[in-house]
Picture (spheres, helix red, strand yellow):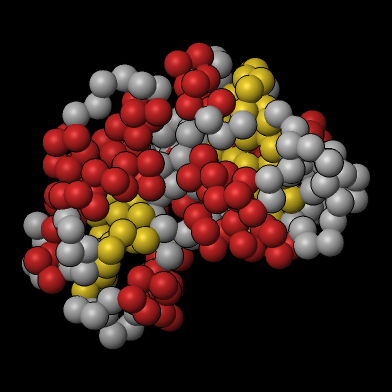
Length: 262
Ligand code: DGL
């Protein structure tokens, strides 16, 4: 494995930064390519057929272009729909991001847990299977929100985002029967950890859990023993649509300084 072979992170937008952040802490010198399918953003309101056709084809193109050592689908929507198709289509290791229902069930005392994701993610059989396997003695409430995805994008683009709008967009999860007993909520969209400080402030008795740290450890495990550059390289981002210049300062905070169109 060449030391300059990058880790490729993929999302519809900036959500994958919540996976990239903890990964950079574990692997500080890893070369990073961050790919965002912003031409098709948001994924959460698209159909299963669209995602299943689009994501493997796009990742195939990206792998040919950047020759990554490992691909991380840093998107719950794409992973719960297309992970198997992507693995079948690529001959590099692929790490997916799926809702952290297992750690949430392990943590919950009240045995009522929430899954806050996109509309597409919360209806996936993949989520039914995780709930049946790891949380069969829990009530699992679900809510899909496109508004939260949009608010996370706006916050990173430094547009003024109203904290009250974020809290209101998550509220339908808590307004369901038994919602007052929720003590653990899975942030099942990679955009949502970017709003977690406000959600925690609004719901102090609730633990908000995401998969970022676990996925970072998985990436470190799968690349254990491989060589890396001696110094931290500048990361780059590829967009399927126009380069969103407003995101440049936030991306720089994650070590990504070169933004271009795929
Ligand atoms: N960040 C994505 C996820 O984890 C998708 C957001 C969207 O494009 O709707 O599900």
